[in-house]
Image (cartoon, rainbow, N blue to C red; front, side):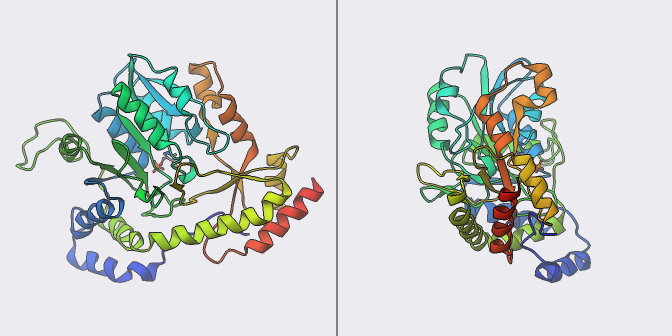
Length: 359
Ligand SMILES: Cc1ncc(COP(=O)(O)O)c(C=O)c1O
């Protein structure tokens, strides 16, 4: 079976570090837990970086930090993984699921500008599948209305806009280190910010509410990552640019083969440089995406949908009644294709071509 993804890290890459951790007996709050946020901060150019257990806990923490409470509105890109909205639902906030561009798959500025209200407390902009296109336009609207912008960059470590890395652009940026991501620690996440006040509060909130003197000045949580996971992250961050280059090359090769067959790529706009964490295209008009996934499975090739239209999930439909048309179209018509080092890409493209004939 040709799998969708394979991690870019092997046991040998971190074997020495793991031995060192076991020899020291320090499995949390050790050297790697300090080093990884430093490396994230250096790499992204963000002034501050903090680790969490996942992007979900990172997003949840950021919503609390900016004071989102019951009954307040949070605008959220509608084409994403459900975690992007679950965190707002969990606080009793009202998720305003906002439609996206059919080209970039990201939140459309007009949809935000025309519906923002005085009850809007935060915006969660999702870099769909790793693509940060449109972030600056959304940031400008947030600034105009004095609303904090939280970037769901779960998929976009290594992406940038005009050379500026994701992580140093929005007020708060949340990353994931799940195994589908390019930088993986098994599970894990991070928050970056340039804002000193947010950083000071996060330091306390992520330490059970204790300040540097050990006084419990707030309530807080434990979202720490273990040392072994941090060591994995430290290794991969030094190689992330190579990984991004490889994936972008594979994306281009897919496009060369598939665009002439009627597939459409996800577009990068305004200087965006996507890490291509997920290789996603929309299928040719008239082709059933689900039938294509099934036909590829018969040919021993794993593929899946692009991602979800949040407003069409059964949970969200019970809360709100409007399905966003572009996000829904993308959910139904996009496909994620295999991408990893050593992938027999020509073979996958040939299988797609054969499958299309058979549909
Ligand atoms: C856009 C987006 N946000 C949030 C998440 C949740 O990430 P995690 O599994 O690290 O909680 C994901 C997971 O795939 C995602 O794709």
